[in-house]
Length: 480
Image (cartoon, rainbow, N blue to C red):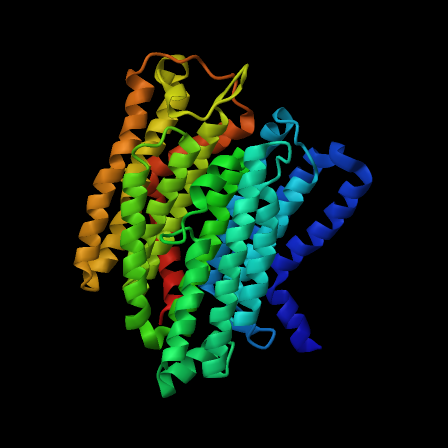
């Protein structure tokens, strides 16, 4: 009984989310869609409470539920980022849902379900808990993608995501079954111990490849990126913002945990795959985005490129590389959320617009919005002294220190190529003829989020003194 209480205490943030889901679901069922705003506010409150618990009751590196979950500094760092992304996504969605007449109480509940799954993904320390958590997240995301059920684009996005996501889950499950078959263990520590003593067989390596294929799909890296542009473009914009922020961070945390804790003995094998995926993602993200005219589709390719840069930090398999990835993830969250706030502001009396050309002359009609978008685009391009530069700097330095300097050089070259389409947006904003002002004023919650994310990107040098040590501590908890 005492052990059960201790195990439940370890998962207190997740229990808060699960309890909130049950209570709010009953409340919404009785009150109907008129309770959407109240449920959204309460959902944000539940996420904040879970975040406070994570911050003020940090993990001690212990295992719970017979090794199914692990809590340490790494899980705490990643959970804070994921919870922040989820809370911001709910705040960003309120006005949009009302304007598009899809204001239903299920939306914040689905975000909470996905957040619970992501939190469990981060703490997963076993192939079984990994898969259950991943599916809990994925099922909620499939529904969110098709949430605008009267929109053909949204329904198509949800269907594509469901079909391809199911395929990736099957690959992951098959790979996990092979790993279990050849090691006799499902816990990450047990798998690592078997590999360290007996070595890796061909069958186990094949299982690892299948698992990596499933996880690479979840982070939308090449060659399993094909769903990303269509789902980003077709989903409602707040859903796209949520996809780009929280689930990608949780999937990257899971990829780090699986490779570095369960398979450290075969680093040379999975390193080759990560290097290929990283180069392919950076190259495709840089070149495929050049001809895009839809800003949400452009952000999809930008997301693929950013994942490629993150994987540069994973490739060395060192604590320094993981630290770089975690810093990059924190910066990426701020850049992405801020950019999607700007996309949500792209509304005229005739409806929402998504074309990059609709931003033409924005500096003359809405100078503050234009300035914020300039900061975010330059940060995404990696231009110093903005935050995006430091994200790339830390992962490249980790690769160079590990002797992977060709990978770092390729990353720099693709960054230069990718800077073209970010700077092109800035030129359209400042040099183009005004295409007409967007509806004003911007909702107060969007203004606050935009100001915060823009300030984060500008003053990252000041904030780095608290973020970088936390990322270092989290990395050392994962890689000894």
